[in-house]
Length: 638
Image (cartoon, rainbow, N blue to C red):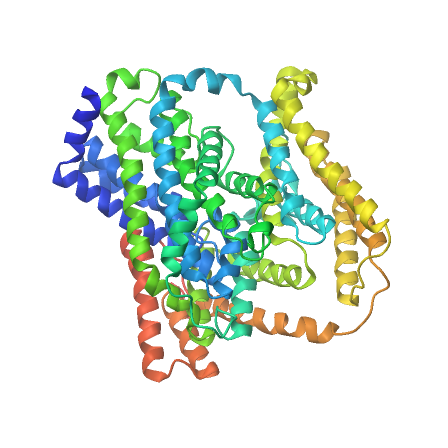
């Protein structure tokens, strides 16, 4: 109690409260901008903390890191674009609610769940620090492998009406994840001789291409975010808050998942949110209560991942403080701040720096409350964006998507891959292939390979008999078998779809591509080839099952089906060319002005204001806040 009182007194100083508020505001801004995320924010803030005392420094840093997964809900719900990779699960039901005129309800529920989940994670952090050592020592790489496999089985719950397409999408994501230098032999896998791909395909580019481009295309096709002509439901914000409070058991259960898995090094936020989402989807109690199905605007599909996301931050801080082992990528950056301020994390920190430790816990809790309150206050205005004409909203959103994809590598191939994965996302959405499943496979595949090899090298095959491994693998196998048996009994293995030629052609392209990629693995060493070969073989198997399942193709609507997607992909391609030719400031301005001329909105004066405001925002974030070297424009090099 004395330590808690001392920590409260330390946190009450005006400078430290100001640093906390500043960190929260910056975190909310970073979370809204697609593609940059909390790591970007921590990287630019650490140099600012050099002249601060440790408590003020960590109030700023943890204040920012704690709320990026709160504000990333805004673009996820309103335009279907995850502000960070941790909001991909929120898109599934949150954006559907916005289409139905329930944007305020979705945002209200998300912010309330985020606040409760974040505070819950901080409380779990405070209670668990003395017990952390035996828990961390209990889990080994074999257990992490089994947990990862369990996460992949959630694909069956997230793949819509055709779970085989969901599994195939996850396999394709895994194969894309294996592009780059093999971590065991140091050989190239599917890099086509490009040094750019040695580190793999950039995560932000994949997520923005898969989710942002298709959803913005959908918004433009509808004319606005909201699909219904009805006015937004009055009291939607309060109803969303009430939903989160009514489902308090789900909030705490998902928060527990986030805090526990966040404390396990190597299990990222993407895994955590999908595990929480899948756990909520298993409880099939909503249909009887009149709620929509999951994926169609179910409020529990918003509450669960948002609770887990924010509780994760407290969980990932556990191994960081207790052992100096970062629980996430952002915590790895935070270890650098520990070194700067002479703080040594580890078992003795509770004795040597108890007051600082408690102030960190308080910072996480207060930041989540403050961030949620700010976002709740802005919700009535944010919800109005659902009725803004798409011709004004989509070009502006595309600017930040393009800059978000370009800023990390600053390579023209970032923009090329954005267009490629954007087109892939458009085709997958059109043909009913699960984009969340692809994203999940892309994120989990490297961990799956790494955990397997480490387990095998340490314990041989005996790790397969460990209790945690047996339990999680049994649950995963049971989930897949139940789906397979249900499909056989319900459909008899007969053709259940009448695909277009486009659908059949895409499936055959997938099959041919995977076969060629699999054959190319024969030239690689065994350690580099074994896991990609297993995934490629499984992909071929499920592709053949899908071809057997579908019926005779028809040409009906093929051209009309694909033409809008091809037309839209030219828009982000034009943005990319403008950025490369004119620079990261002049390029977006020119793009927005041309878009305003092309669509006839929002008018010449407002178009100039919009373009200027966008350039000012890009300059403030990427030149003033985080000054860096941008590549020279093509039209005026040097």
